[in-house]
Length: 288
Image 1 (tube, rainbow, N blue to C red):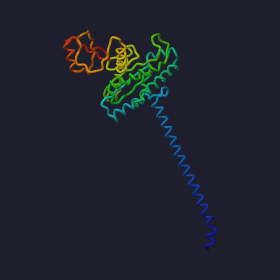
Image 2 (cartoon, rainbow, N blue to C red):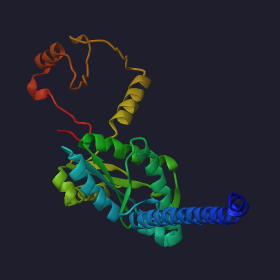
Image 3 (cartoon, helix red, strand yellow):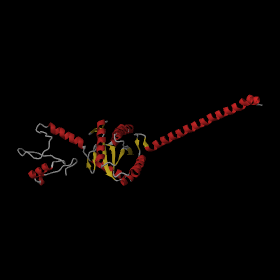
């Protein structure tokens, strides 16, 4: 009996073992296929999400993505303040009509790439708001901080010097930037974008190729200060003393230009010499 079992044991066990192995391979293959299908579905899902939220032509995010991001910032980040920048290309219709819509699309893409490089420094997003208008949302940024970002974007577009010949007074492509700061509620209902758009309109009425914030055309104060310093130092009749000044030398006519960090003793000295009625204050944007 024992010899019989030993003789026929392989005939029973080997097929069973082979069937088990084949079954395992088939089952493993099914699992792999399902996993691959799942990954494929996930990839397709991600692709559709990108198509739903991306502006294909410019590589920026679209208005649907802007609304989603505004809701996320409002509900998840709960910022004390939010700033927004809206910009568009100056006289874009003229460029489009002169060069063709295809060239116009290329300019939109080029300017978007330039602005995105600026925003990449602070890990911010660019949204196509509509047509040639684009928007940036800066959570917890003050109006002054947003103005600085807008000035960087303005200078970057200028520096690219994209040529155009459709207008006699404009040889390169430029853009205008409107800046506004508000609350998270204004961000939620997009009324902050309306405020920024009003500042953009101020740019258009003020000559374009500039930044507007707080109802006035903004000045890049760092660049402005550097240029004024350069001009002053280049003047042969001016000697620059970089030291603390408390008194004024009355031996010769003198023009005093000072700022908010003026020493108290010097401020009193100026007041004694001129009287309050002779003192004037000039802001970097406009005289007050």
